[in-house]
Length: 166
Image 1 (cartoon, rainbow, N blue to C red):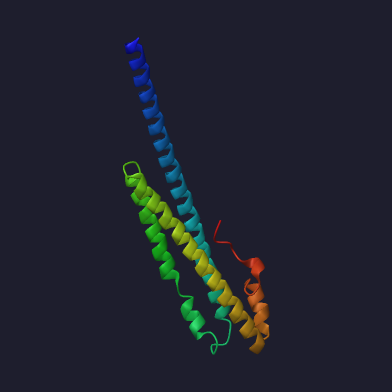
Image 2: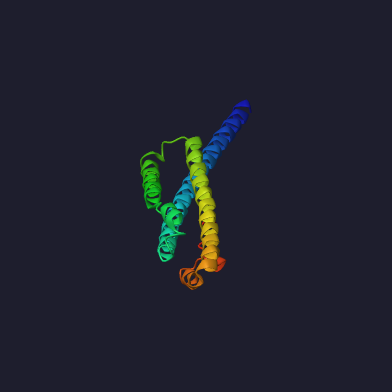
């Protein structure tokens, strides 16, 4: 009887151990999937950001130079977007090479880093849109035709914004 109870206890411990390992593996796979989903979303957001900056740059370059010098300088952020895309590629390569052996805590930090990057990009895109709207309003007062040009570029109205956070 004691042997039977000992065998049952041992079997229960083994089953619990296997369940625990299965839960760990599932959590790891879920984390990896979320990291890749976040990386894909960040990449889309970066491309949208670059396109929006290029659109705003084209619009600002149609305005009189007396009000656009500083705006044009602030819209030359393409090297920063390119660097962010390169950094993202490095993250993906690291994941490819280390995802299976990296501790879960490190993977969770990577996921949190991507979340922070997306949030920061979304905040900066909101500032870019607000600056575009303010410039559109200011330029409309001195150059009424600029409102039509801004509208053609989708600037100055909130309907044309590309959402950067999901």
